[in-house]
Length: 108
Image (tube, rainbow, N blue to C red; front, top):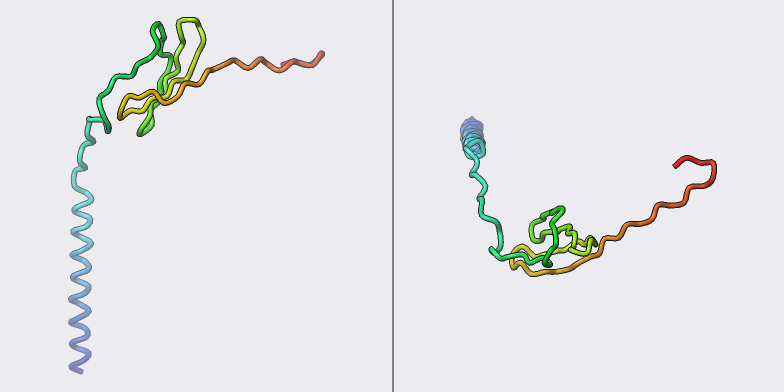
């Protein structure tokens, strides 16, 4: 009988300890979240684009920025830069692909 009584008391203590852990975890998670930092990762460099170019579109990921540029001669390119250093990584020309021919008697 003493063993059963000790077992019940021990299990009660374990249940109480588990309940305390659950309550503390819920309290910690429901606290106000930390506001995101406005400071970007990486450095504060300058991105250099060709003279006379116009930025038509930009897209960011965690480490790079892609700029769609219209150059002064009218051609379009995709320019990729590293955000941390501002270093130019790659330039890809953008060329329009001609539309496929439409067979006679068919609508496009």
